Length: 167
Image 1 (tube, helix red, strand yellow):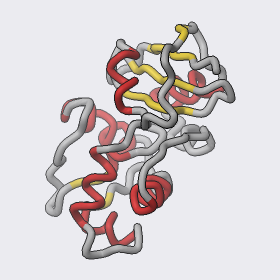
Image 2 (cartoon, rainbow, N blue to C red):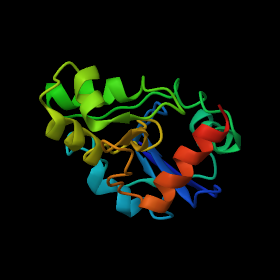
Image 3 (cartoon, rainbow, N blue to C red):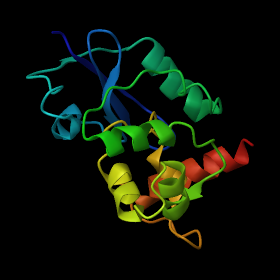
């Protein structure tokens, strides 16, 4: 199976995506190094190698368009992640959190149908391999504190500001 990756320069920093042969995002984030993303992919989906490309078609366009202000363009990009039932459901729920309308971890747990599973909701964010396309940056601590973000709090702050400014 041919797996490809591509890095795009964005205002928030270099962004790399890894896609399968069908163009489905397996992993993505603000790094110039695809090797950083490989371990994030579930072993069942993890490729042995990836081949660099200069363009991943719809995925590259979505990354560029999102950073240019089209906040909904990421919604239609297919993503494939594998884990337990709750995490997979939680990642689907995250894709429905609107840009510019961040939720708390408590609210996210409730949206995922398990209001008492705040730690599980936080785990879904921490284990998300497909940053941006599964927008875990839209989840905050109670009171509005940023909480954590694999790609750094400055990037999370930029994304939230970008989404709020364009509303």
